[in-house]
Length: 202
Image 1 (cartoon, rainbow, N blue to C red):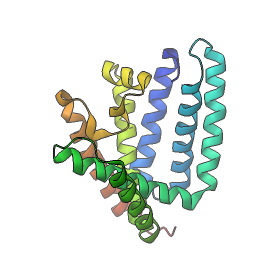
Image 2 (cartoon, helix red, strand yellow):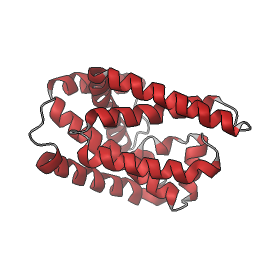
Image 3 (cartoon, helix red, strand yellow):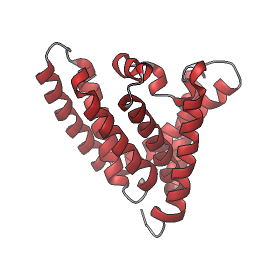
Image 4 (cartoon, helix red, strand yellow):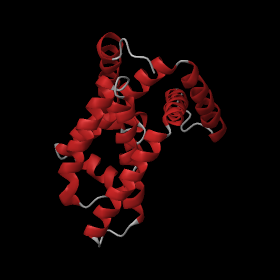
């Protein structure tokens, strides 16, 4: 991950990117794909580099981010399928964790991810709206937590702790995080369905 001095800039970027995704993800879907492609590419490259070489890590994160943004932007329909697959995987985790049985088996995650990808292609508008609203809500929330100096968020970002990737697996004493995420995601879905996602053909 990026060195601590760049944490504030990264948090602001997460907040802005998350807000765009959450409240205008359908209308600006290609931009959202570019944002998440950049985050994914930068995260992969910076995780592979040594933290002792700050300049090289930042440069590598920028290059990796640009490559990731280009890949997801060009792979538009693949991006739609990935949104659906991500929603399917999230549903698997929510179902298993709500039943108290822990993490879902890999087969269930794969099956629901495939069903989500197929559904995304058939119901593009609604899957894009829901996927970008909830994905953006989580990105926005993580950015806000990091910006206000939440130590758990900072440790998670630095160590790759699973809770930063799966909202439903947040710490037991911080269930309010998952509730806040759901509320923001629902608001974002409503805004997109009623305002920003109207009269737009994909």
